View 1: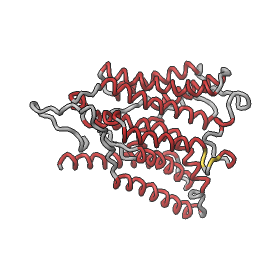
View 2 (view 1 turned 180 degrees about the horizontal axis):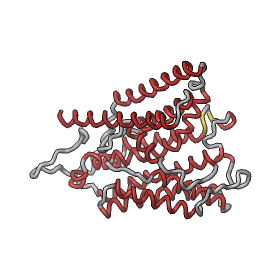
View 3 (view 1 turned 30 degrees about the horizontal axis):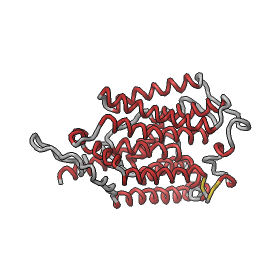
View 4 (view 1 turned 60 degrees about the horizontal axis):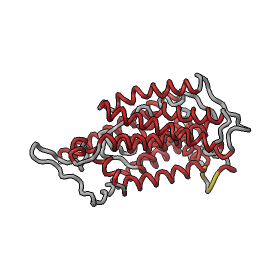
Length: 352
């Protein structure tokens, strides 16, 4: 429960929001954001020293490796921006991973069928939006908790992706069916960089800036935070809860569809099962970035920082020779620590 929740008694009801009221400013927790960025720097320094100590050299802190980490982060980072909106509204989306794979599969199928990229990419993004819209419709009409609904649609989207791909990997021809700009969209090759970074990373920065504006200056953001703070109070305040949920899940689906484009760009193929487990990294990025699973709190900068931390740990463990199980354990410990800190903060707020 966040601090901006409205207390309700049997005789006192909150007044509806005046139509001419400006949307509230996003309450940016400066110290929280500083702590996340500080954690990122500390992890970076620790792995740099550890590689030098155990391996006798350091390539972890090289510019090329930093570019590689940021490029690897792109799929999770884009989808996590949408997940941030959902979690702020008090929801969750377990189908994000398979929806990303479905979007990438649709993109690959279109290219394999000789459709141009100008048709294939909008089709992939539209697929992601439809997946999000379906989640929102089911959650709103069935009034079932998002965890259960998206658990079901997670398998649904996986099955559809397998049908589209005919249970195989779709491989469009790199020479004739995949445009060069899409193939190098997230590439860290020297001749693929713009101002030192892949063009796809600059697009993420632009999308993140637009998301910050959305969460800071629009009335829709006010509804999102109100839903995450107290859904019952939000309904009594005149907010159309079902349509707001459909809208925010559809918006998050747009990010999922865009993440599908990034995934295809990285692999140049589409594997229907490639999104399994990806939703956990997406949710973890939001939580590590300071988002609360209780709703009402989250930030774009924090989510991007959380996304980088996840892949920074994986890359650092690889550099010092640690196995994949150890990487999973390290990530799990960090997620548990982030959730524990959130709960402790929540209890402190409730007591104050």
